[in-house]
Image (tube, rainbow, N blue to C red):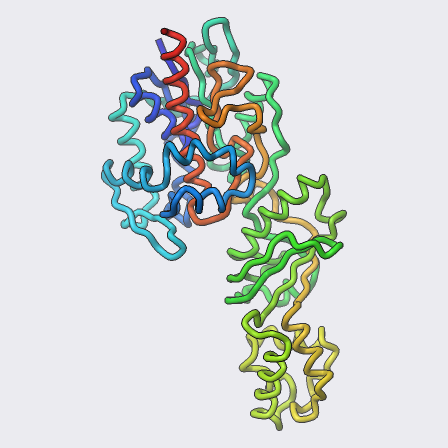
Length: 423
């Protein structure tokens, strides 16, 4: 008899199968793709940033949606324990900038190999090229319809992922299964996603990267939603880069909480190009450059201040004449230029589509599950883990760590549930 069927062999499914089988359960792991872990394979640009080498509190601080739900899971499988498991199964790891953890080989498939080795040695069985059509509750367990046959299991773990990167197999199957059990599913939205602007400046500056700038995202009332120092990039459709990806997740959470859209909230991004200088210090810096290049036209006098491609935009936005010589610029004009450099405004009208998102914001509402074991409160024996749940975090390995931890908690939870039933 099958004790647990795990549907989906991504990060949460592989870890859930390992945890359950290591606890003595007969586990069958089903994957509709020819191979497991396709999203793991493309993560970290093919290098797999599988976790962040941080403590539990730091991890929780980087979770945007429903962090409290993860307290038990991250305690059961903290980053240090995950790293130990992966290394014990043949893949050496390294920690890079921002405490991001990668395989020493820089090959994501080495992480997948380690996870497969864990699953194999635990005794769990794996079947690829197997698509689940339907899951049905019975008196003693669950019927899992895979088209050519129906499988019976005492428990089921849904670990099918969200809806980001659908080419990897994350096509929302788990939401359909959840709804069949009358579970609430919050609308899947893109998170960790570039933002879209119709400001032609973005298109004109396409490819320009800005480093050590502060990005502030706010609504039309001026309420700050996100503010951080880092790097961003102009694209043909708007803005991207690490700062923007993180900002997008905070914006989505804010919009959902207040039942707003990008349009109704009038979202805007403001870039401080010189965050280390206040207005007075920046004016002194501009004046020093203008004195140095006093015979040059304004455009040429700013080459040491900002990237060359940005200069015409800043001059135009400040209402200055680019042909005016640096020694002819008044203090009031300098101050206008400084204000523009400290507050470069970019209106935001939306984000790129969900299929381009790194993770999904939304999913099965976690209030319906017990955080200690990931089991549905009203459907005994039904578990869920990973991106399928309404949980998302910042970049840096936190989302994969969340998937591994919830999968691990679910696997242990299934073992505890069946053991208690048999006593």
